Amino acid sequence: MSENNQQQTYQLDKLHEKLIELLWKIKGMGKIGDVIIRTVKETVTPQERIIACFYHLELSEEMKGKEGGPTFYSCEIHLVTTLNYIVLGFYPSFHSYHIKSIHHISDLRLENRFSTGYEEEQTSPEDKNYAPAFVKFNVTFAGQDNNKVGEWVAEATRPESVDLLLEQVKILAKCVGYPLSKL
Image (tube, rainbow, N blue to C red; front, side):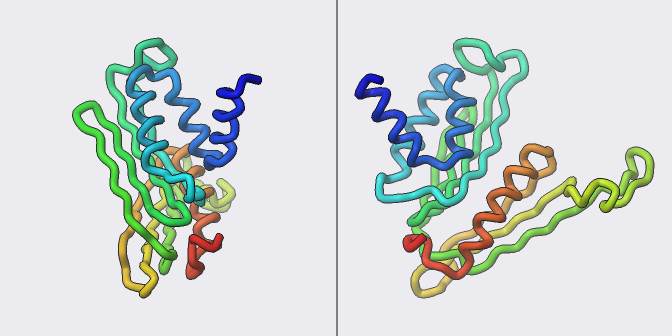
């Protein structure tokens, strides 16, 4: 393996599993994929470890898997690291990022809503093994002095987004009240 490939592998080993998944998805998006990858590298410092990652990626259907990149895209990435809460947004008309220094998670709320079959035959949540059809999630971040410094509110209805959000909730729920830099 070349030195460059070893360095890339080493860097990927330090990333969160879901961020690696996203990077593989956007790798073939052309120039915008390169911009997203570069921005992630620029906003997450080597001193940070990514604790949680949630993303929402939309691509125009006709361009999925084609060279040159999509004609329409939107990508929003939320990262909770040992030092910061980072939100990256990539849209056709603008790109943005917001980095908020955080010490710990002071509050985490989750609301699961279940389909009752109004659209189809009547079912109960138990019939679907309590798999939520809608998830609402709210995390409050605090500074060292325990004052609120930021908040992450997310909602998901697409099954893959619901599953991804619930995975991150399980991770973050274990971090409530603990200094993230010590994890």
